[in-house]
Image 1 (spheres, rainbow, N blue to C red):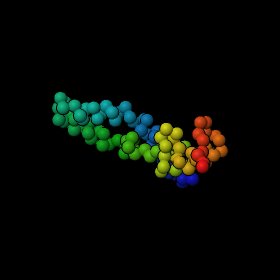
Image 2: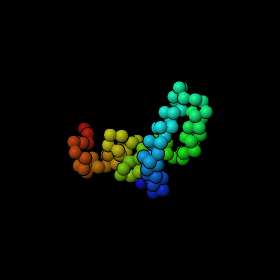
Image 3: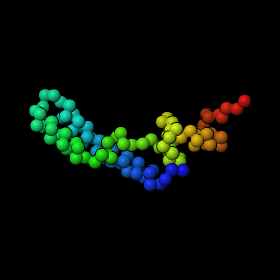
Image 4: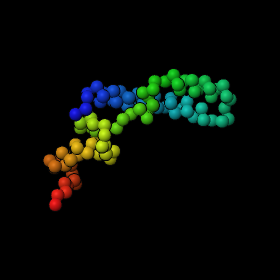
Length: 101
């Protein structure tokens, strides 16, 4: 089980990304527009730099919904391989059959 503080920190980052995504996208559009004057683009770049770093989507770490484990994460199922194996063995995941030979 992952540290609760790490999981909560990641959840705070997700909320910040959701809150600032529209503003961040608009500023990036201004920065990338070659038709705009240089000083306007520079001001937009300064505003983007003033936003919190944790509001960037790349700061989010994929974590298991069950255990909070950050590694061996299956995106489609939103869980780690260990949680998947455990729940699959218990028969709690529909359609998943543990292979044995």
